[in-house]
Image 1: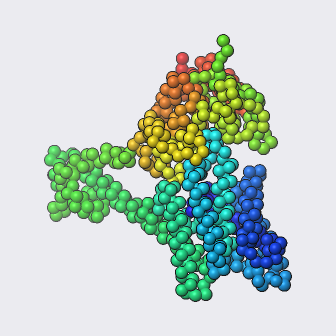
Image 2: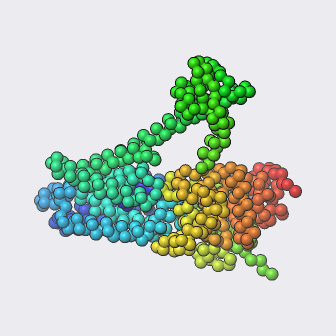
Image 3: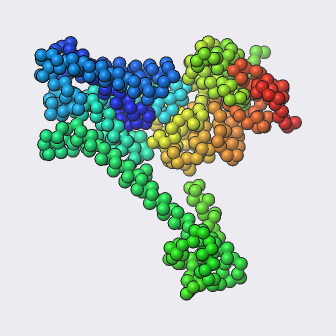
Amino acid sequence: MLGSFAVLRKQSLLGDAISHAALPGIAIAFLIIGVKDSNLFLLGALISGLIGTFWIRGITKNTHLKSDTALGLTLSLFFGFGMLLLTFIQKQPNASQAGLDTYLFGQAATLLIEDVWLIAIVAGISLLILLVFWKEFKILLFDEDYTKTLGFNTNFIDILITTFIVITIVLGLQTVGVILMSAMLLAPAAAARQWTNSLGVMVVLAAIFGAFSGVVGTGISTVVGNLSTGPVIVLVAASIVFISFIFSPKRGLLFREIRFRKNRNNIKMQKTLAFMYGIAKTHENISHPHTIKILNDFQGFSKRSLQELVDFNYVKINGQQWSMTQEGYEKAANLYDQQIKDTHE
Amino acid sequence: MEQKYAVTVDDLTVAYNYKPVLWDIDLMIPESVLMCIVGPNGAGKSTLIKAILGIIKPIAGTVSIFGKPYEKQRSLVAYVPQKGSVDWDFPTTALDVVMMGTYGSLGWIKRPGQKEKKASLEALEKVGMLPFKNRQISQLSGGQQQRIFLARALVQNAAIYFMDEPFQGVDATTEKAIINILKELRKAGKTVIVVHHDLQTVPEYFDWVTFLNVKKIATGPVKDIFNDDNLTKTYGINYKVSVQE
């Protein structure tokens, strides 16, 4: 759901950076409290995720580095630090009970009923915030400078969106883990964008796709057994993206190709008709027969387009001769005007 | 009698890195003029507008609108950004973009209602885009996108309009349509400030002009100051332009 905003901001990597940045937070939380408590881990993850995000913002604002550089830097720095802490913790005597490595790839089986409640509550709150600030989110995403001139505090809106992205990611960590979390954030949104041209529909679709991959992914991993849940969920989400890219009616590759070919054939046919019109015009009687051979010199002519013209009753064929019908003559005369009108509609 | 100024800029200086982009700009724009800002690439024309509107923070200087600080007068000012500054693949419709012009007066959280929709449709009609109101914005031509941006500013019903290269990449028909709307705005007593590139059309379109090249070279009525001397000072080469008498 919130992934839609990340995708539209062209900050897709942000999710990746945040989830990696969360890792040292989890490790430090463990080092401080010394026992496994997933709520406190999440708090640690949240804090270090937020620190990571504000670093990225700071770097892009105050230096010449592009945002992808800033994201990459922060991501590897925090992840490296997190791994360092993890190996350090593993050498400690009580490491085995910590189970910190489940945060790397996630393990939905470790979720407790309290965790599920927490996720549900936070999801509800972000939904509420999203509805309340819908207008502000939308205009900021579309045109930030303009939003500023209208008197909105763009920093505030920006921080609000980013904070909720961070919270969402941190909550997802337990399920899909640090490394795959960004796929969970982006895949549903990228898929949803293919199906709609409305921001509202896109957000709703993304939520549905996300939920669907979660449920189906968990289902598959339980049925097949011994498959870890996180990767399966991500694979399901990826399949949705793949299907969307190919089959979506408006932006999908398949339908685009079909439309493209149809258009070309159409134009070929019309060009042939126009060429015939040019010949027929020179005769007093428009249905005066001509040999098909003269058409062969015309590039773009094909047997198929001739057949189509016959089907439309624009042209009649008699042996090796063709002649234009009244209908075809009128159609050809208005062809150019018609085209212009079509493009303006 | 004291002249009433729509926009007053004092000592405005903007720098991105080390070199100043704008240096010590003093500018007084009278009410109800149609003014263009001309200057070579990198002269700081867009930056000047953005600094006046507070999008870029200046190093020094103040801006006032009708004698009061800009922050208090935002509702009197509308902005048309460069067309290329936004992602036109964003999932939304033409009408939706125009409605964004009403967000400022709505303030936080409140949603646009029937009144806002009606105003937006009227603005679309004015720029001749009403038939395209439900069109996805990525399916609009460059000229149509520019008209949508103009409609969005019209909805704001402001007293001063700032426009960043509204004629960039539009055909002759759209250019004429836009300039006619701008002239109507001026007739209605509004002040219009436009970043402009085509020097040939300056005398025909505008009645006030500012020459800018990091520093302000000159500002005043087109008929008095739009001459080879100022053009040469601004563009640094011996510039000759045929001004129609």
